[in-house]
Length: 82
Image 1 (cartoon, rainbow, N blue to C red):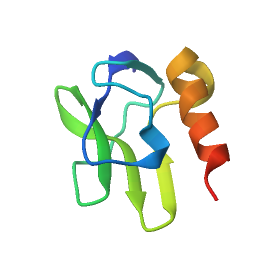
Image 2 (cartoon, rainbow, N blue to C red; image 1 turned 30 degrees about the vertical axis):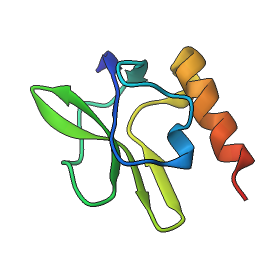
Image 3 (cartoon, rainbow, N blue to C red; image 1 turned 60 degrees about the vertical axis):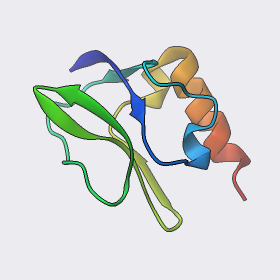
Image 4 (cartoon, rainbow, N blue to C red; image 1 turned 30 degrees about the horizontal axis):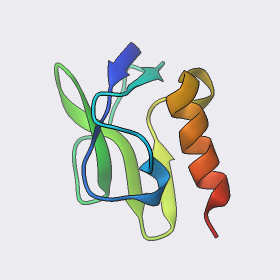
């Protein structure tokens, strides 16, 4: 829980403009492991999925509304998707 860095993996429109090492705010202590849907990861003891995409489904483990500029960018990216 708290601020941690993101590591974008495969290209994803949701993460456009978010760089490797940018900070996001995580509130929950549970996490999903790295898998085929992982588009960004984070490490806290072990690597876990910070953002996922599967077809037209997207998810973020961190809280965009509390993640300052990174969260605002993610929400802007989401809202601009068709």
